Length: 476
Image (tube, rainbow, N blue to C red; front, side, top):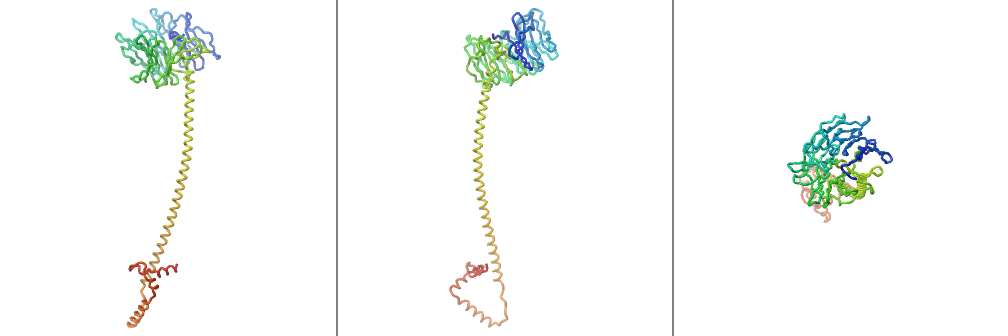
């Protein structure tokens, strides 16, 4: 059954070997290997005389690391390397202390990190140790006082940051908060989630790959529980708006969250039934509550899945996910989410293709329109060029006519201005001759008189008569 107190660990190595570690009552911690046909080999006992609570992970070299306690309450670290299993003592207990210590072990920044709860002088101590690649172990460190319960703290990590969420005692009251460890450095200070008078319980804590913190809180009012979701960036001080996921349900003690492919799933398990709601990251808009159909009537187990293949990883508290051991093993939600994402991506692809097709058609229309515009512009330019040529011809012809007229005017002025040759005559004869010429000139026909009349009045143009122009035309 799905039980946080009996977590199984499914570890997938870089060589694609899959092992399952679990506790078997009155026997101890066992390990089994999945073969290529999808069947599990018979389990082998690797730790006897131990308590049920333990935790396991893979280090960067694919070695299996385990933290556990024996029947007396002593705490050990066990690692499997090429030469076999190697055990290191972390804490020797003077007095028997076989209570549940809520171990969790994880690999980050090349080190193995371990958290657990110790009881000392009536107080519950959230404790921490680390181990380097040479098996050098740090001294136990108390991170904070903690309220002991069914789930005294919740752990989540994303490969570079680890989070612990818990309730601490403060002046006869309690307060929810978180503490973070970034890049293997020192643990930060306690960051409150609720005020001291709040009766909220932290049911789930999740840190995604983008450094967003997601939490689910349970508030009990009149013996009825309300499940609330909210989130924030890890370095922000203020939380986002709350979203009520469901209310009027007795308890959400077995609720959790899972983040994969930008989808957040909040689910809770009751017996073999799984109920959930989902939301896309950042929207804070949640779907309606629905029942999840999960591979028939087989039992649902609580498993922590870890893989060196980042394509198969997800984010969840303690890396927990509901599992059924059918055909090897089947994890809830993952395949459904991937299928939904594939359909969503296909729909988005179709939308993009339609958009590009419309853009292509619009481009063709625009090209045709542009071709027509260019053709019209070319016609206008040709017409303008033709008109410019005609205008240039007119201008040249005008200049030519003006030049000829100027030449003729100059010649006419030269003829009119030339003085008559003087002949040696006496004065009386000359006067008589002039009088006869005047009389002869005055005796003209009306037609001759009309041709001698100046076209343009004025002394400067008196020589331009019809007769003058006629002679000019005959010369041409």
